Image (cartoon, rainbow, N blue to C red):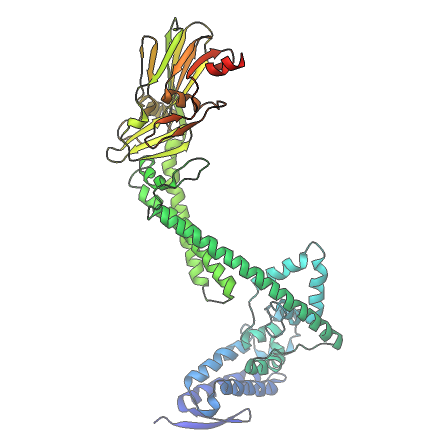
Amino acid sequence: MDKTIKINLGGSLFQIDEEAYKILRRYLQDINDRLKNTQGGAETIEDIELRIAEIFNSQGAGAAVISRENVEAMISIIGKPEDFDADGEPVSEQAARPRTAESKKLYRNPDDTILGGVCGGLAPFLNIESVWIRLAFVIFTFFFFVGPLVYIALWIALPSALSDAQKKEMYGRNDFRSSFSNTSQSAITGTQAKPEGSGAGHAINEILRAIGKVLFIFLRIILIITGIAFVIGGFIALVSYIMVFFLNYPGYFSTGSVGVKLFYLPDFLSYIVNPAVAPWLLVLLSIIIILPLLALIYWGVKMIFWFRAKDGIISLLALVFWVISLAAFSILLFNEGVGFAEMSGRVSEEVIEKAPRNLYISADKKAANLNFDKDITFDRDYTVFLNDASKEIHITTDFDINQSSDESLMISVRKRATGRSKSDAKRNAEALIYNYRISADTIFIDEYFSLPAGTKWSLHEVELDMFIPQGTIVHLDNTTREMFSRQHEIQGWKWEYSDDYEYEVTDSRDNIWIMTDEGLKNKAEIDRSE
């Protein structure tokens, strides 16, 4: 059975086990050695003993045996004996030194608070009543809202003086007794100590305290609403990202305005960058997006429930991890993006000296007949068709019809691509596969061009331009008419995609066009205007 010892501490009797007694006796002896030769040291030691007795009573030790754990908990509240020195300076020298603001440390004061305890912490630091500091903040509120901005900044920057050691630093080391006298009872009962000051100061403080409670309720409502918005917004964004990019649901997801199908973008990466790099880019991109969304949800929960958590280290590690991921993603993306640094191309032209009076333009190879697994439309006139099995890439061709300067017909094919250098870009452009053919008065053109097998996409473009004489009658089929419409907004005409990528006209007028001095015009419209 462990030996217990009866002790008298601050006028109260306690039973303490032998191990705890040795720790307590050594603790009190160390404090006595530091304070006995200082001015008011004996009174301070008495206050410390009273404070220790109050802490033991609050722990329920008055009706039980004080254990080592009780003593260690008490020491963590009051502070270690070495905390009673100022940076290693002898206490006798501290007593001889005048008390200045430099001997104190700035904290938020939880025992003199209306909102965050900022003014209550500035008061002992500046040796003035807190009410006048509060009035100063109120006055500066009317000067460009400076008061609230400074208050919020100090609220965020300053820690709260929760322990007696921190309160000792806040009030000043030579005013340690006042720290105990103001806070010891409030720490036991849970009540807030009233700061010293004049009667007028107390009255003003009570008025400000009432206003502060109203403001605090208003701020809590704002924080709760903001927190709910953070949680809902972050959760929806997180779930949407996971569903689209990981669970592949829904199968088709478009931004609408530009028609980009987000579901296919991750798969498209392997056609743009090195296939070995594509998974890393996706993983890093997910970290860059998901971590801030999780942080947004967490901050929202903290705003709603107003709880404190020791999450500083975790938050710092998450921030470091996010920065590293962002840096790695940027480096990989930059290295792959070098392949898009320069753009170049080539132009080939074919001239027919005498253009036919009636010119028929029909589609030869159509996108509807392609064997592809997915398509990505970056814009109305630029669609990429992907075949995962053969790794083939096909892209729609730009098509335009313009007026020539003479009676000849000219066909111009412009190929462009990007590369690490001009010469590399030119080689990429020349390798593009695109064909057309002429048979009597009919020109057969391909709706799309193809990349050589194994070639990565690098903003490839093929533009087919025809220059025909004025007065030439042009007959287009549905596909070539849609190809032409991508380059021009034609009044009164509307084309829609069918499921098999065949283009359908929703207007029943004649499909005959005439080259005029104002460009290609629909014959039916010309007849109606005449």
